[in-house]
Image (cartoon, rainbow, N blue to C red; front, side, top):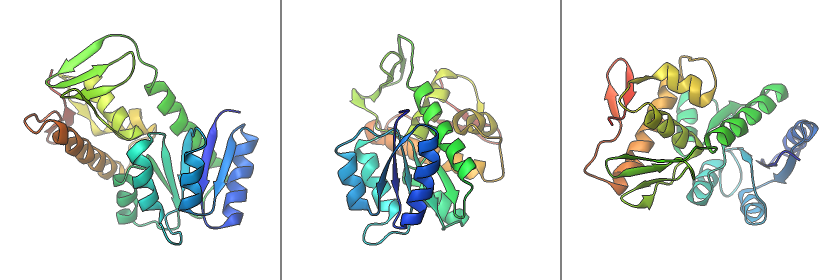
Length: 228
């Protein structure tokens, strides 16, 4: 098996459709009909990626995603009927890596899951050496980023954005390059909002560990830069 995919949705038909298509691609699918079941599965299995619905009874997908992000860093996609721009931004802001609206194409869903896992795997394979920027240290061998000696807990997308900026420190990285490199898609109208949300989350997390340093600077009209 290629890995375990956690799928959380209160509609059994949706679970069965997703499971069928992912299983055909060689994945093992763990199906949960609510957040409590999902959290129990998390404690027992290693997860490669998660697909979460938002509108579920008792605990919704947004709340579940926030709990998962406290301890786990595998890529997460929201698959939901909530399709407004505000809904998408809220989903990405709480730690999701991708967002797909129902009704959905099973072919596209599988492609996006593969892309999330592939990007996550690639960015976790690092070379040796330590990069130091201010009070931030990036160990390229382990992939761990620390600020003031404390590990920086990031989502998969936040991690990949920061790694891109670190590797290109001293250079302005455009929104188009960030989106194409990190998300793996062509730049589109909503891409900038996605980037802004993740940069804001990155700055907040960096600031919690080092209030004195502004690590990510905005180059207005061009992109973002980390100064060496």
